[in-house]
Image (cartoon, rainbow, N blue to C red; front, top):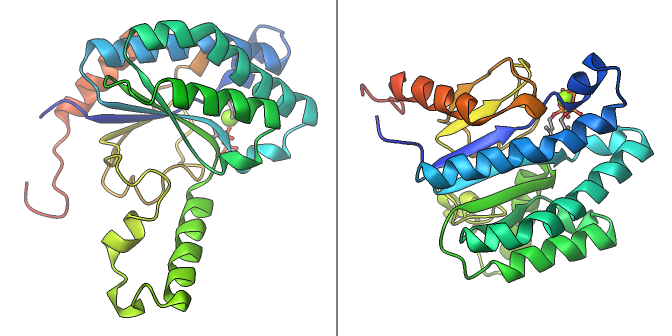
Length: 233
Ligand code: IPE
Ligand code: IPE
Ligand code: MG
């Protein structure tokens, strides 16, 4: 089978990684940066076109305020520490989710990184922040309804392509492979529309321990799958 064009990862297990070491949960989030670095490098080396990382869900606001604040400040330090190297590697940073609701400083840094790298033609690194699959579909439905009411869209013409065109990043192909670390086997509101025909892989490794070898293994698993898309393959 051909290599995945788009890999999407639910980076899960930071809290358990920290707890296993007698550390505060936040230490797990801090340790995640190395894993992100590894994943980005591996994708660059293996010709992957798109890497989407689920970093903060629409439901993660329900965590303690201090943890949310720490995650947002880690987003900022990730950008400032990694932007020069990502530029050198021709990586284009993009965001998906209701990002306008992020804290002002995190949002400004994120927008700065997106703008600074928008001309890059290598790997597209997509950060899913305040992202929820249901929110994305609700946002698309609201846009469709508004266009229909204004008369610019005929309700009878609304088909799958019309919905797909109103998602956050309509130009990005669906993920071929969705990986969720930490052994949890659920989607947790990630890319609900886009993952309709994705292959899923659920390694036990906790996200802070995730390294290139885990992506080698994921690629092997992916290569052994037979994708049929409802046909006979
Ligand atoms: C994933 O790790 C990071 C985010 C959801 C922001 P968790 O924080 O969910 O770690 P566990 O699942 O509690 O171990
Ligand atoms: C999914 O992980 C969200 C991210 C990794 C950003 P969670 O840890 O929030 O998911 P649940 O609560 O276990 O379903
Ligand atoms: Mg979790």
